[in-house]
Amino acid sequence: MSLHMMIGLIGLLYVVIFGGMSLLRREGLSIRFAVESVCLTAIAIILVVLTPIQIHPVVFLLLLYIITLRALAGGPG
Image 1: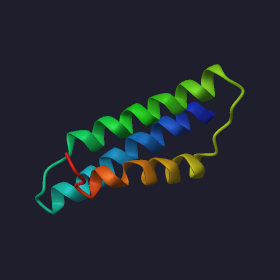
Image 2 (image 1 turned 135 degrees about the vertical axis):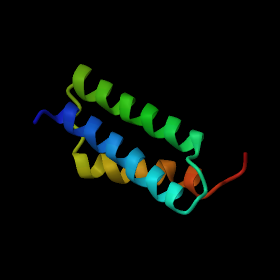
Image 3 (image 1 turned 90 degrees about the vertical axis):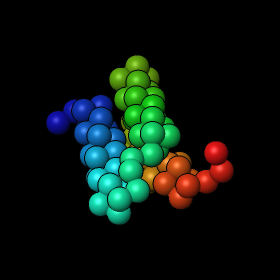
């Protein structure tokens, strides 16, 4: 499996799993969380496809989690 497809799949599964967990808690899906996750995934895919930068999938998942963590915590806004 190519790297850009793997990063896309990881980003999609991240949104589905964490969004599903919030739905199980009956909180509803945070639109901000979903948009941030999809945008960061798209940026990572573009970087991998158009530049020689290679992002390891585990590093991408950790960065995605750290960056979107504040959206899950219900920060200001």
